[in-house]
Image 1 (cartoon, rainbow, N blue to C red):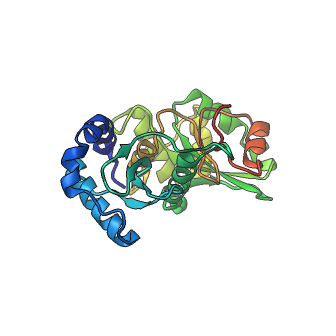
Image 2 (cartoon, one colour):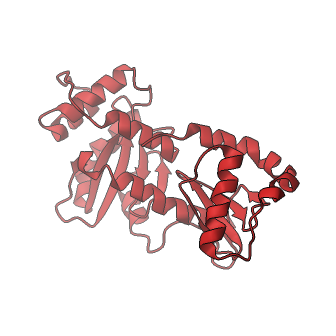
Length: 258
């Protein structure tokens, strides 16, 4: 997956100019009375002409006449006529849900699911939940979380690790985590590395770079970073009992502050 750093920067810098140039965009404005396919096609053109990049998707939002535009996990909104651009969260005042976050969760989950066969998994015997964790070998709180693996697994939580060497791809942390992924026994190598024990240096075809870039695309900037089954991204360490409570919530945390 390609990290779209340019998109995020462009979106923020272009927000004000897009609004100010609404009259200029009007020449390419969309006929909002057209059918949805036509509106979507024309909005795509407006976006490409303005941002010089193709969005991943354009679809009508929960508000009639307002379209949701996705660049990776970044979401913005565009009026059906192509004149007005909104950058920010869409909130449902009745349910107190952050509708933007709801959409982002489904995208996060799909992006991470593509890597499932390349994760280092610590499977619970009686699995009730699956937790994805971006981890770094040289991260103290990552080691603390891993030391609780038996307790976490005993609660029915399977942990699937993804690599996120915080120091970058040309660092000792990167080399260490590659050795874990390339080990014959990945679980044993992961545990040794978390306990600051030596793991044989080894290289192979591995997903570390791709997983690191995935984390960046999802907005991960520290470890551990926890991803729930619903696609909620939680930064930082959480003890086993709190993990279970979070995963067992009947409704994902999409509410905004009261």
